[in-house]
Image (cartoon, rainbow, N blue to C red; front, side, top):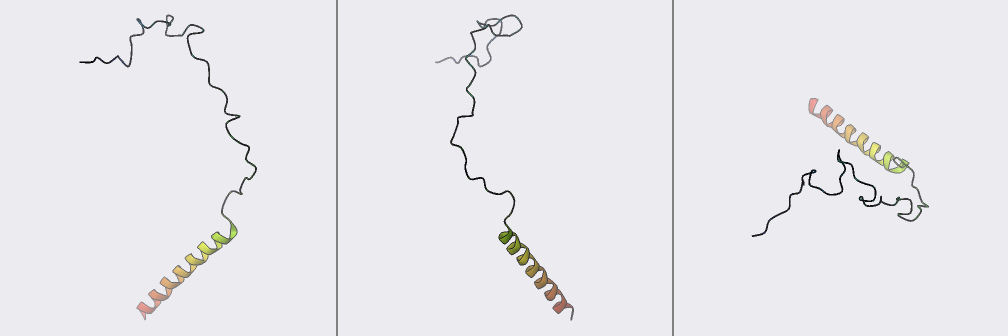
Length: 78
């Protein structure tokens, strides 16, 4: 039978802690490096927002669908 370690150890028995829970200098691992050198520089930044052609096609399709249902409703009423 194996015993598991406590995931939340007692602060009173944890070595390296000062009173109040702070850590002594040199006990903590060093901070991570910055992300400035994480990847290549981006040279192509596309425009934000919708392009004119797709937006025109979507609006045209919406107008055609609305016109279809308007004519369909008029035919049913007559």
